[in-house]
Length: 158
Length: 286
Image 1: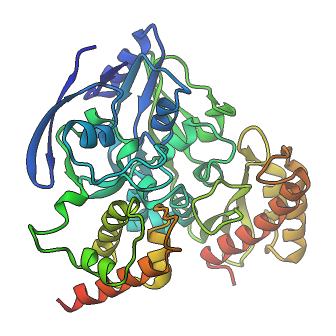
Image 2 (image 1 turned 60 degrees about the vertical axis):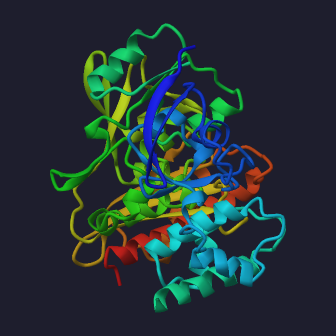
């Protein structure tokens, strides 16, 4: 099987790779590019652990073919912090202890960032519905919701 | 598996038409990729239609809307004019899956996946939407209810692809609504879904109606008897009772882990009544 040559942009950098036709973007990110922030949970688009943005839109990378990324702009958790400086969401997750095992955290941060870009002043209900596609089996979600609300408030003041 | 990304519908139809193995269309991929990854299907060819310009736009056509087959359900929710004209269709499309899924999934894909529980399909059928189909023999336009024929099966022939879904022009004093029952608040598959679209005259009398039921039969149903219960009435209590009875009578559901036959039959009537009241309010009914 001959590979497919893909040129894409990931977190602002031009990236080229060769992948198989049936390979998902998640597998490309993790296995070919070493970007292991996006996690494989369910592989069926239910858990959100593999969340990335494709052309600015929140997506499960397990439901995208690597070949589809050609010409697109991909955003992953690795592009969230500014060098050593954490994104307010990342900081608030630490302050509120909004994670335990951490498997769902990268996906939730990417989804929360996408949510706040569309809705900078979400209600608690907005946050809960906005993150309904991200499953967490540890926290019971309350601390996650509080961290996102707190980050939103800080980002509005900034 | 080969992956092709043609630039025109003609090329896409030709690729699918001449393929000897198993060929699939890829738009949002939220159903296709799941089936691919779980080994449920083993495609020889996947044709990605997202580079075809006609599949990517929402156009105003003859007073209505032409929605490209690769337009995501999230994009429908962001289109103010579409939302104003067809709030029921948009709310149904925005109930599918999570935000992640809505960023990719499409109403044409929801239709072609041919699930009896598809959320957008009852709303599309109630809206009298049509599917524009392109194939090796040219273009044809069919009412959306003629596309799914059985669970997972459609009337599309080899090489045929849906290019767009067309929503008709809205007469004044019209409204639509979609409601579904799920045991959770979000991220679930409909146990029953109901789409209602109505038009009122100046005196508040219903002059036109279409009612559609999901998840209560092998395909999503158009229920003319339910529409008849509303037309010519002010959608008062008696008319809504007749609507509910007609909807319950039309159900041919299965028992499964999501709901029993008895429950689905009852809930179809309850939801139809509520959806009709929302549609009436949206049409400006007092």
